[in-house]
Length: 335
Image 1: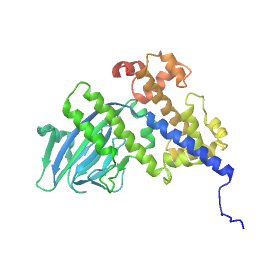
Image 2: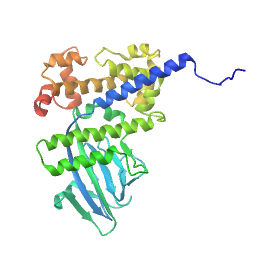
Image 3: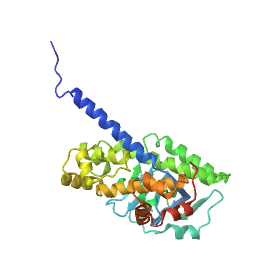
Image 4: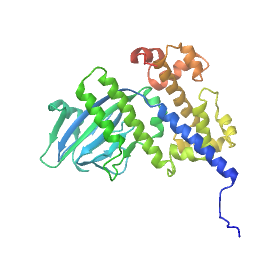
């Protein structure tokens, strides 16, 4: 007697699924490799209810709740987000937001507040009323390549890494402990070490987001990655960003009509294919400018631009300065 299993995948389906998983992992890895901060800044605070602080226009911001609880309200996010001890949140694109003891508590500008309060001997800023205390670490991150980093375009405005039943993700308290130890040490290279630890913190938050949402996201970049045609197009762009891609050539490679492909890509990813490609190229160029002494002509050629003039024009449009000024201002990085 032979047992029949309904809907069992064929060898072809299994091979297709395995191939898709491979390029999806490659896409995730490519984005994670592109995470590198050029600077970071940290603050430690303990506020007693009622309290509320607002932050805006300071790049990517994160908050780690060390003790107690609070609420986060982010512009563009419909509902306030409750935060508990061991939670990590990252406001990826620096949208204006308020963190407070209750959803409706009035807020004051965070940076105005810290100017009026001297940190204690442990570097903690204390403020608020006489109610329950919330202690947290918050910080700002500036990326190499700035807004050109394609990761910032594909992430949601808020990443929330929730505490587990055991008190948080193992990597989170360990990384925070190391950060605080470096801040307290004031040793040689402490600033650089803290910035690299911030790299790890952000990579872990992004990886957690990918792992938890890769198979369930209904819109956005993760949904695009799952789409059989758009996902393959993303893999092509990330794998060969210097190629002279057009919308038509991408559509042909994934066996789709030009108009359907363009519309679906824009709908899922949030921007047209060639604009997404420009982000990839400019980000790659920014990293190369800081990690090498290559001439501008070599950087332009390696990132898909036919001339230094075209490259410089695109770079300035997205970064706000010329490639030469960018390299000179930020300094040469260690390879």
